[in-house]
Length: 223
Image (tube, rainbow, N blue to C red; front, top):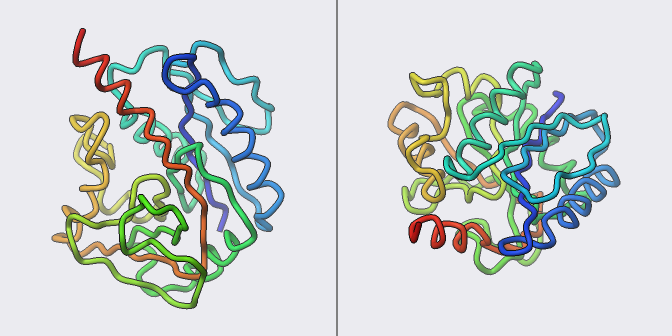
């Protein structure tokens, strides 16, 4: 397994003045902790200043936010599929890692439902969806069945086979019409087709949950 991490980033004085610093923390903590080979796909969404990225990372820049964060997710996933990564994690940049990220991949590697499921970690962030909130890690999985509480969108992991099985007719996994919120709903829609979603209880990832996109929505709607 060689996972791809698709990470969206925005840097601007008005909306996210520390976007690049968050991304640097993200990249550093992943490099310090994950013990298997992986690829990084940085998708920069309309930043005022561009991230000075190392050439070992894949990078794509979109000059506007008119198609929201969903375009970044969809294009990042396709970028990773073209690169032949067999597992993809779509993530925010306001998270950071510890060594339990290794348990995430160790536990799902031979999991029977791996190729029809979306996976997410637990988190100590109080604003994450309830099934993923935890103070400590434990063993095993939690299968999610409540359509309003799927895997939260700040970290979504799924296999290439999941993408191929459940992608939309337009080749997107996420609905392009939901440009800022509600992207997680693809999971419950795919549950009707046999897909599943699981929390990996052995992996804990911290999420700052800054929610800067809400300011962006407000400004765009007023224009």
